[in-house]
Image 1 (cartoon, rainbow, N blue to C red):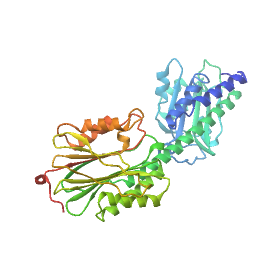
Image 2 (cartoon, rainbow, N blue to C red):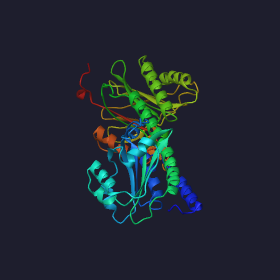
Image 3 (cartoon, one colour):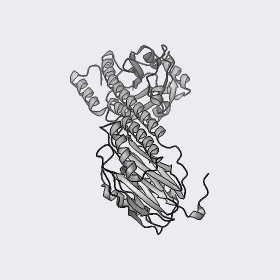
Image 4 (tube, rainbow, N blue to C red):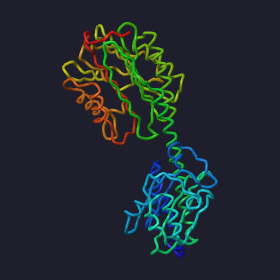
Length: 440
């Protein structure tokens, strides 16, 4: 597009950019969308560099007055006869510092667009020397060069480079306003992606800190577990699991799920997990424990509900006692390898109601296994919970397998491709008494 292009063409270009840019909150994808709009419609090649600290830490970096900030090339686009040369000269993922003598460094330092109608050989040589790639000195001389800073909230996030080769019409002053408008929209999208990434990292860090880093050894049980966070911030939630030693040779097995997502759900999860551990120390039966945990939940946040299944296992007798507050049912695998749903009657979720919950009693002899999990493992957009539970039972049915191998098999088979929800899986296998090592 030349400076003489009509205002209608320019408006159409910006409208197209508005439609195509910012479809996701992924920074690299957003940058590729920008270049798909600009190349070849506005330039022959292009690239976007973003400050490294913004990518790795999600924070606004300080802009040095000389422009010499550490930046990473997150996207490029090439519409020329020799794309291999350009991709070799300017590889995606490169982290570098642009000296202030180069147009890129000037744009960073001044937060203003730098227009070079035709690059001289000396500028190409300086770039080639700065990055140790002689091919740059061959490609750049004679090209028209436009470097526009990416500015959001008064901060320079990086810069947007557009290049027209020697055979194309050079950039002119009229092209600067169009490039700056495109850069402004790009910067907003990049900033939104930055905020999203920072919040998601915070939520995941909080979740990780609140979940057990190492489960307790349990009398007569071999424990396997998996926890996988959701694939995006909106669905980072409050799934949790725990193994708690009780008096005698008994163990409590817990899996819960706070409804809702984000940091708030993760914080509520941590409070409920701590409360569950405290109540377990009182040696309550599962129904009484969940009754009291419900009272705790009602005091924490009236707008957030949670589901939870709490089971106790007695090594001496193999007895299981299970209660559920609105949670998906456990699956019990018999020693013969047959998996079946435990007929627990689920009460209301934590945070509502006030009834004592029914206790389901079962027996798990040596070689048997109990599976507790959250609904993220068995429900997807294309599969109902009942179908997902049936699939889980099929995976658990069969000859004895290592518990870690079984965890991997279940997660691989059951986890949806879109990863829209957290997944917690807890497997507890009864060990014959003669194979149980004494616990101190």
